[in-house]
Image (cartoon, rainbow, N blue to C red; front, side):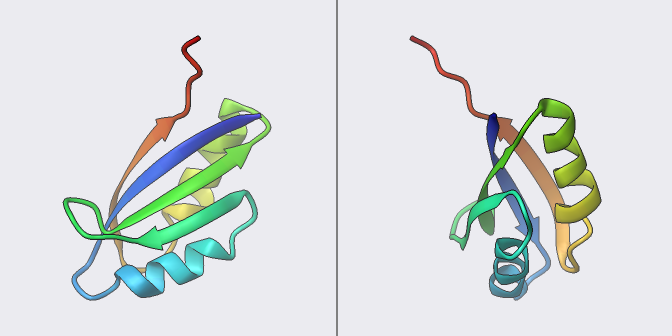
Length: 78
């Protein structure tokens, strides 16, 4: 299982609607609108890195109002 945080910038005034739409996508565990340099932060999980890439490119980036994404895979440094 691969997990990642996806940091999202949106068009002005679109953060809440983007977070709500993304929250309903398969593979998304949380989606919250936030303040700061990013407007929405999403936690996602997939079976592989390739599946994660498909989720981000085919589903998340297709949501209306998104201008930029940054995907940060979770690593366990122990």
